[in-house]
Amino acid sequence: MKDSERSGTGDKPDAGLPAVAPFEIHRPLEQTEPFVFNSPHSGRIYPESFLNVSRLDRLSIRRSEDHYVDELFASVVQLGAPMLAAQFPRAWLDVNREPYELDPRMFDGPLPPFANIGSMRVAGGLGTIPRLVAENMDIYRGRLSVEEGLSRIERVYRPYHANLRRIIAQTHVQFGKAILIDCHSMPANVRVAGGNRRPDIIIGDRFGASAAHDLSRAAVSFLSGLGYHVVRNKPYAGGFITEHYGRPARGLHALQIEINRGLYVDETSLEKTPGFDLLKADLWEFSSQMMAYVREGLSEDRLAAE
Image (cartoon, rainbow, N blue to C red; front, side, top):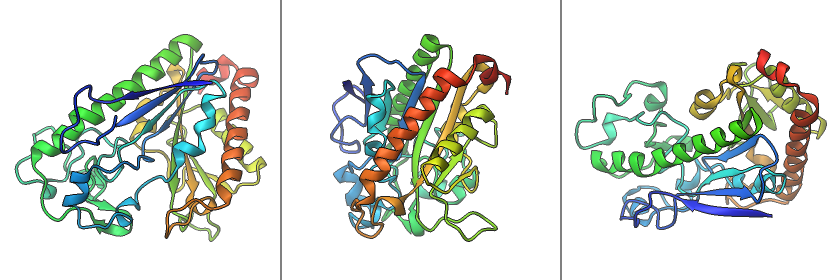
């Protein structure tokens, strides 16, 4: 059983915003676990005004999506944990960035002085307002107005993070700890440096900075036990969300999980494959095992010690 609430700006959408609430919070009728799940890149509702200013077709522009990740993890709500899921697409706004990682080359006027224009992510075209989708394809035909870029941040980015902070804080107050699972997918051709085998799943904990080591090791162990080739932190150690919300010394833990899209989606058509249902069932089992581990096997002292 669950409740879902749609959240966003509280205003009527304008021409630059999605025609539906930008994100949804799926809640169990009673939260029974100290876990919060987050799917920031699986949104697939594209504003028509955005599509009109893009040089990409309706399939190509979806290359940056974490396809159906919200659906893969939907069952965690039945297990007693809330999940926040974006409905807006990552190509339109990336909430796994600092709020103002902006590329001045994209805009028709000067950016505010507090904008971070020099980050590596901005240089790579993957700032808060992305310039590129996967495979280095330019998104826009021309420049955006500064007002448009800042509007997306103020009206969607900030409410998204305000809700995520609130859910994590409520969980921490209720249970004395909170464990954020930040859910993502990765291209099927990703390889780990020095090896030829493609990982099925990557667990990121910012090299131990965002979560207790025992939690990371447990996640790797449970997924490996389900038959997946799992690695840790390479090449994805966790983005802004994992880094920003993971404070293990305060009982706030954040793990990023990256799932190989080749396990469940056709990367050409973006349609689900027969592997989708098996993967979804395995992620339910993984989530159950993590919850049981924290509930029964991982003491408060061990969570706080690292």
